[in-house]
Image (tube, rainbow, N blue to C red; front, side, top):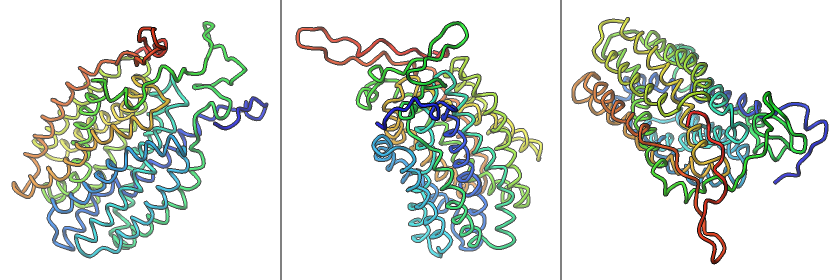
Length: 444
């Protein structure tokens, strides 16, 4: 660990908010240039190359697959190298992936470019950003992660600009421009992504090592006790690890399916112009911004599991409205409800795991979790695209996703906080918890 400094310069300000700003900016780039705008490229590729929607969605699934397979190694690298170096690597790979994507002419070339892009998105994305933010906060962890996720919402608002660029200068040129923006804007943001607060002589939520900070009511901020945190092996033995993975996977199944197929559904199925369909994506992400603003403080005050369940049920309702509701008003209702639910639920996924298992091994635990919940993200676009090819519309697919979201909410209900880890004591001494249970969030 870096030497701890308690000098006046190190006490000038709390550095945790830098990670929030940097993480929000990195997620804004990824949302605007790829995740939220991918449906626009699907429409163009289907028209230009004659690929089926299922075959095109399989490329998105490869992004998810490469991210999931990279997850365990990424978690290990985050703990060994720190988030900044992993993110810098990811930005370079992402720029190369988008450049190669701009050159594709066949499906094999497309799939290869998507695999490279997926590794870059993973290394510079959600897991790295969340791992950087989590150690800096305990009491305000949900709020910090929600503010970080605002980048996803703001990125989605920029999707109409991407659509306009595709129309005006072409999709290949737009992808090349995106590759350049990843480096020009992403590299300065990566500098803000630091290791945990102890490396800088600070404490989570503020305060400084050696200079206790007393909050109203006389509560003194203390360094977290790493001995109370679960290791990856210990987390894998808990029921909560797997239930959170299943619930998160159900959420990503519907999220990825909608992200890829909302624009094709509105353009081909409902007959709306491409840029109006892109406007629906922007409305989803604007609504998710509202959800993030209110969801973070809610997660810091109330039971995160109950909030996640309510959000999953809202996702289900929104999908049914999209599938069967009449006219543009149904699209607007879907976008608002789905977006708010997304904004409220998304940041709680990392916050719940940090509350349950601690921050010491968060990167490796979250990386292993990706092998579970990425299954949903992998299946969603392919499943929905295949059903659309068979039925010539998306109504059946959206209805099934709604049912799966409702069923997936039960995983959060049963995912109770795990007990503290038990480790063998000295010979002749009975096994006992490794340390006193760490203070749980009030939501638990």
